Image 1 (cartoon, one colour):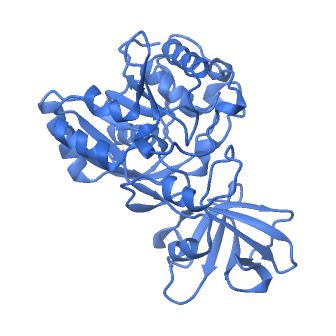
Image 2 (cartoon, rainbow, N blue to C red):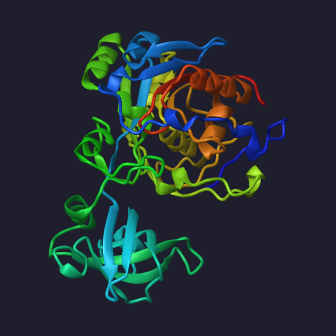
Amino acid sequence: MTTSSTSSTRPFTVADFDFALPEHLIAQHPAAERSASRLLDGRGETPVDRVFRDLPDLLNAGDLLVFNDTQVVKARLFGEKTSGGKLELLIERVLLPHEALDGSDQEVVGHLRVSKKPQPGGLLHMAGGLQGGGFDAVFLGRWPDEQGQLFRLRLQGPAGETPYDLMARHGHVPLPPYITHSDDAEDERRYQTVFARVPGAVAAPTAALHFDESVLAALDARGVQRANVTLHVGAGTFAPMKTERIEEHVMHHERYAIPPETVQAIAACRARGGRVVAVGTTTVRTLESWARSGELQGDTDIFITPGFAYKVVDVLITNFHLPKSTLMMLVSAFAGHDHVMALYRHAVTHRYRFFSYGDAMLLARSTQIQ
């Protein structure tokens, strides 16, 4: 399912979503405490500098916070071809049995970094490489077709072990490309939300990383309700725009699911006059995909750009995003392009920390069509 802006009265190009970001503002490590990160309150015309643990005081009793409960898996694996050539595999998703060529639950698709692609049927020695100690994978070709950007593999581990078991034992935390250190124990703990429940993401829903038990308890005491959706964040979330014409961009696909209880919670929130507060852009993409398709689960390649008519989300909690990215377009569509760009200039001037391990921003939905 693809949805993008068609009603915008102002023509935008990718360059309109660019901004100058000093490299030292890209956070390489999380804040010492999750809720000690900064929060830029951008709901009004004048930005207000806060701390994330202030969030409960900024919401109302009866509001509904919607979280993405996906769990980041250790999807980055290293290995060798039979010839000895080194390779790196980033598993994007574990295929469901009806998606697999052999009907099993052992097939995966992902990004393969290797000097020369193997032939279909070729054997890859993962984790332990040719020295052993890992597992093998059979290369099956491109996915979803011969022109696909991803590759299909069948994992061959010990009997009874799923691909998730193999990743947990042999894999590495798939840190974003702008984080320069190798993953360590801190990343295993902190590049994961405190309520992660459904394994399948290769990138964290980063706006939710700021929540800890003390903030959740304060929200409960405030009377703010909670609900969950699941969207397994893919590596495509970091993919750069390759064209200056927004409408020519091909959006990546991600798998999502919305429990019936969440649909009921949204209806109850509306009935009592509360606001739906999306925690992160992945939650936005899930809710707005459902609003347009009526499907509670499936794949989405929704592309939200200025002019998009939001149907579900009233308030957004989000981190700061990459220049010229699809997520910059999403937040600009939500809160207004000029307003968002002004907030980013404020954040740079006041030395906010950017991207996955960085600080957060609170936005209200603009009522103006741009």
